[in-house]
Image (cartoon, rainbow, N blue to C red; front, side, top):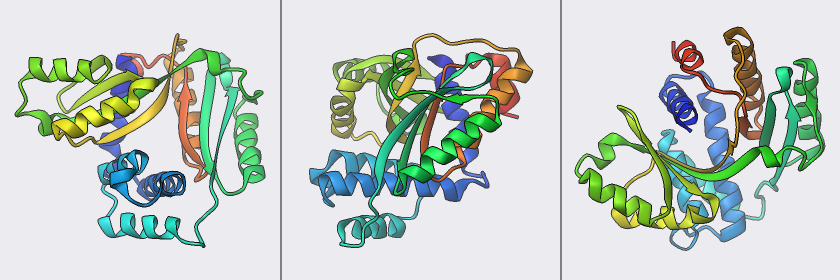
Length: 251
């Protein structure tokens, strides 16, 4: 999963300067709206909302915007979002799993199908590719936030909270859990007083496919085409994120 964590960290580093920042804000606001509709507006009683707020803070969404989103989602005029998923193949046999949040499913189906068709891919049937991915909890933490912890003691605490794998680079620690342990890890980090940069359920490929650099970069470009759409929340694929590819994308 090292390639996954490196790519996630590259995206987080880029997001602060990225021209797509408004789209990132839109996605976390939708996450807040869904959480409020499902569990109520009180973060203390709604773990999903606490997670959504933490993710919003992680991308530097202003506090006033967060509060307005919670208030709007609690009212009669709240947007009626639905969560839907799509599966399909991109070029060179790369599998894609796409999670969306939308107020118009027909529009979203049309957008996703069109992107696949225009880039040499094909939208598949629901459930046809789910076997390719494992669902994991993924927690991204800035190393600065844990500098006062004893590394060995912290690792034991995280394992107690359900950590299956822990990866680190100079800036971030990435923690992976089974999706069933997502809640217990969230509680463990809150108990330890550790602020997360982001926390999410993600689909990690069981096996990956390596492509030549020019083909791999086109797959990343296709993933970004999906991510550019407001209806799309997350995009997962089984392309092998080689060091060569990650280096070319971090420039």
